[in-house]
Image (cartoon, rainbow, N blue to C red; front, side, top):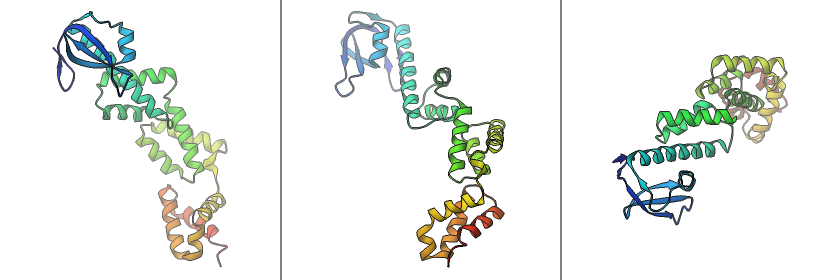
Length: 224
């Protein structure tokens, strides 16, 4: 008997291979007239399964291992569709769904070999995006650390960005313009409240007290 997580799968001869009605990409495998397990159609095809073939315990185990790898790969690829991810994010996502550590490691290595996951590229894109949105270096570095990016890599990207005149070099006037755009309506109705909310907004993005005060002076200087 082969453990599948929720039940045990016996061995026997394949008597039926049926595409599922609601998920035609999956195939139900019947052994000796009884439903045994389901597989991705691609796994069944690559294994060359046919009715009448005998499946022993080793063969069933191999099929289910291949199925788990295919499932983890598909889930990881869907996770990468919306944006870049770090290696740690992909690992955590797959672990969340209960995949075996060896499967997780194999899928992550496969993605890295294909160039779909690369921490340096992820960190650089994340840094530029957040810096351009008004985040301070301390906040961005903390967020990258939570996503598994080593401090050394983050420090190198920050230095590269600053020396290259990237988004992190935005000056007080740029941040003040961002504050004016974001709190345009509030500045008219409730200037004091708008200033408090703008202060919190900048603090959450990792800017220090002194810089926040300078930026707010610029942002609210035209009120009158």
